[in-house]
Image (cartoon, rainbow, N blue to C red; front, side):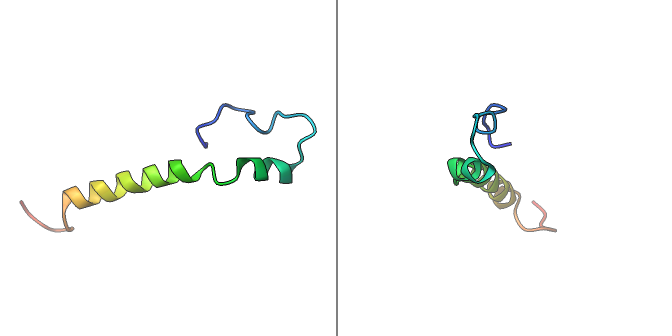
Length: 53
């Protein structure tokens, strides 16, 4: 989901759920930002809805 291998954090022995979430931190933000930029660029290039070229 975050671009990490399965078990990257969850397979660490003795790491609580809280510690797993803390270890991941804001690691998902770069992937979300990339997706948002692609969406916005696509929308910007296609122009306003209903516009004809």
